[in-house]
Length: 87
Image (cartoon, rainbow, N blue to C red; front, top):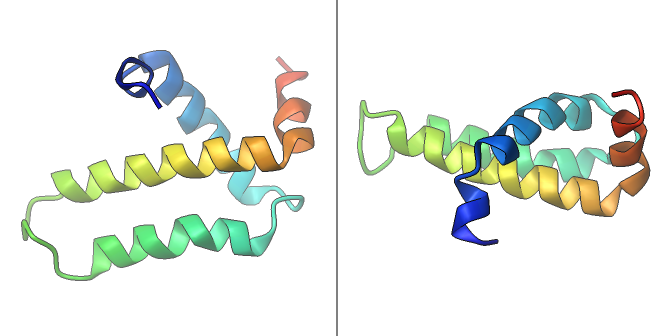
């Protein structure tokens, strides 16, 4: 992914809009959902490099969100295209 796209406000608004729909969709397998939820949860709960500084936790979670939404939209194209037709 290009750096310009990673820092795009339009891209992040897309990520934040799509994440809840993908996590609650019955068409996305539980294994795929757990590939996002478990690492994010563990990173927040386990001790990390900068204790009492949630900035690194938020950054890692946002990178995981970006990865999950991109992967789920590519893998489950019907789920991704179904919500776009509602706009």
